[in-house]
Amino acid sequence: MTTPSGAAAPTVPTPDTSPAAQNLQVTASSPLPVHATPSPKLRDTPRELRRLTTAVIVAGVVFGLAGLATFLLLAAQLQRAEASTAQLIRVQKIQTDLLRADANATNAFLVGGLERADQRQAYDDAITEASALIAQAADAEPADQAALSKLNTLLVGYTGNIELAGANNRQGFPVGAQYLRTASSDLRADALPLLDNLVEANAARAASQMNATVAVLFAVLGVLVLAGLVWGQVWLARRFRRRFNVGLVVATVVGLLTLIVGLVALGWTAVTVSGLRDGAFADVRASATARIEGNDAKSNESLTLIARGSGGSFEAAWKASAAAVEESISRFRGLDESLWQPYVRVHTEIRKLDDGGQWDAAVDKATTDSNTTFNTFDDTVAGLVDNSAATISTGLGSTVPWLVVGATVSFAAGIVMAVVGRRGVAQRLKEYR
Image (spheres, rainbow, N blue to C red):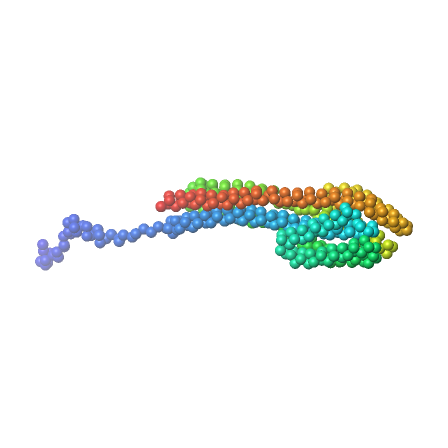
């Protein structure tokens, strides 16, 4: 082909329409393929599910261990409270026995020559029981051993002076009265203050152990675990668009029921222990104090007569002890206030006789009517002490088996929560895969 000017026309290449050429053109004009990457949200879901699984397992185990620890700690604490109360009662009985022995020894001394056989036996029984209780108390409470060892030495010195007083009295030697006063004075100056300290220490120890504040541990951790399980369900519901996760729901229900039942049981225990502390435990202290002060008064009554007109200090001590008895009776719910009054009336008559110059008549009443009315009081209060002690032992002891059951159930519930909660989360992880 030529142009009008005669020049040759340019040649236009003819497009290659072959299949190979077409494929080449398509390949050259097409963008390179780009591999799609999952969103960060989808990429992190398996990892977060595994973390949630671990958290659920830990939460269940923590719940179980919290229940186990709470119930077992409370059981052990109440067992210690029972042991401390028993130690308190032992020490108070030692105190009572020593003063009862002194009351019998001083009363027997009012009669010249051989003392009455029943009074001698009562004195021997009191000393024997006191010695045995000292040994038992030392074995039961290591913290009291040093004081009880010293008390045992003081008891040996006391009984030695009493024997010297009796031997001289039987022979009519006036020095016997001095031995007796020395024995009674040393008992009150050295042994009784030591026992007072032991009583206060054991009473404070027992009272501090009679509480259920450890239950707060179970309540706090239980609520935190349940809150964590609820949060886990909310997260799963938002992520997977499903309202409930069966495993976590079951774990939450098990935990909630266990927490409610456990707190009810712990509350019942707290009420029981509080009732014992404010009731029988207070009664033990009040009744034992009434008996201790009563025997002290009885001993001072005899010492006043032995002093023959110069026993003003002993009578003052009698009045102080009598006032303490009346105060203790007023604090004890089951003790009739009139129980102490017959002895007080007899003592008042003794003082009138002695102050009126009728010493022999006063001695006769002190060794007959006074002994009868006082023994009635002493025996009655001794029975009340024993009853209150038995109430404490039974009350504290009966709670321990239930606390052990609570510990077992709580721990088992925690394991169940961990297992079913893990299965619930694992199901979502399996679906995701």
